[in-house]
Structures are given as C-alpha cells and as structure tokens.
Length: 263
Image 1 (cartoon, rainbow, N blue to C red):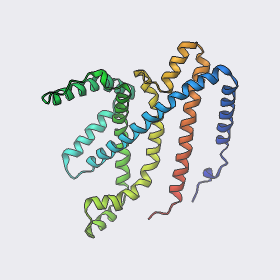
Image 2: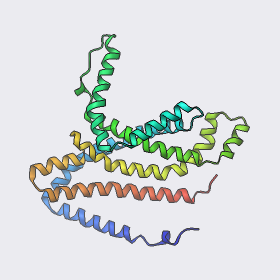
Image 3: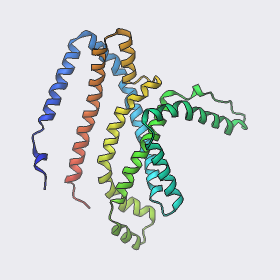
Image 4: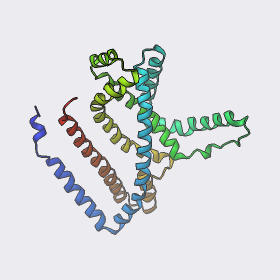
C-alpha cells in the first residue's frame, strides 16, 4: 500500500523550480554573473568526467570487495573487512591529499623499479596527472562504501533460491548472474544512486589539487574579480542543478523499481 505522504503534491519541487528559474534569470540578466556562469560552465565537463570515471571504477572495485567479503574462505573475507574499515575511517579530503602526494609518487617509484630492468625510461611524479590522482582517490574512497551497498544487496536475496539453483546444477557464476544479481539490483540501485549524487558533491574536493573543476574555477574567478558573493552564488547554483536533477531521476527510477513486480 502506498503511504499517503507519497501522494502529496510536490510543492517542494515547484519551489525548487521557481527558485532555480529566478536564480538563473538573475544570473543571465546581470552581465558580470553571466560571464562568471560562462567561465564556470567550462569546469562542468571536468566535474562530470571525474565523477563518471571515479564512480565506474569505484563500482567495479566495490563489487570485487563485496564478493571477497562473501567468500567461503577466511582470508579474502578478512582482507575485505580490513580494506573497508581502513578506507571508511579516513576523511575524503585527507585521503585525496594522501593519494595525491604519497601514494601516487610511490606508484611511480614502483613502476620505475618494475620496468627499470627492461631499460624503460623512468617516469617522474609530475607525469602522473593531478586529475587522475583525484580519480584514484575518489575511486578508493567510495569503493569501500559501495562495497557495503553491494554486500547488503547480495545478502538480501533469499538463500533458498540460491540453494534451489545449486540443486539444479547451476555453477557459482550462473547462480550469481541469473539468480542473485537480477534480484539484488533492486536493493542496490537506490543507495548506489545516493552515493553517485554524493560523489558529484565530493568531486568539488579535487579543487585542492588545482584540478580545474567548477569549484576551482570559482576560486580562481573570485580571486581575480573580488566578487565573491556573485561568484559563489553561481557555483552553488551549478552544483544544485546537477545534484537535484540527479536526485529527481533517481527518485523516478526508485519508483519504477517499486512498481515492477518481483520475479
């Protein structure tokens, strides 16, 4: 039965759309703010690129960690738990700085050591682009949270169905692909979508590395024109547009999943 609150007219959405229209109207009507918007719009591409690549890699790594945590063997389970607890205990900003200035140089040194005997020219730390250091940090940071999302979703599938599939002679991979994953995805998608929205916001942290995303371009613009109020109003408006649009799309997807009968 659908709760009564789900049938309420979305006045909040009307208010959001009205405020958004007023916000963009005020920005476009003012020459300075229109110029700021045009400048910051160039950073949207970087923000989207960093978010999409980081989220895809974090999802793949998170699935691997989740499968390790559900392994029949103790070692991979303990390694998965060690990884998730350590990574989730580090603030994202600290992790970003650590990966950028500690792990990345270490990886370059490891690469030089591994390929040195082949006569390959040594790489320099500066050859590791800052944008990819940021992507690596977001991948590591979010993979630990996404792993827990996948683990909870996989555990939500009725064990009886898995046992029935095993009795029918399906391999472990076939059970996972045909039985477990299609049912678990209904549980996984909503929190996974929330993590994606959170990553869009956390992608603003890459500005501390000088990556030219929306936030960094906003900092540079404000430092140049000293119009902090107007500049950061536009920055906030851009992020709100991205996150609210994604949230509405995810709400719609979640509603469709609820309406779809379970197989």
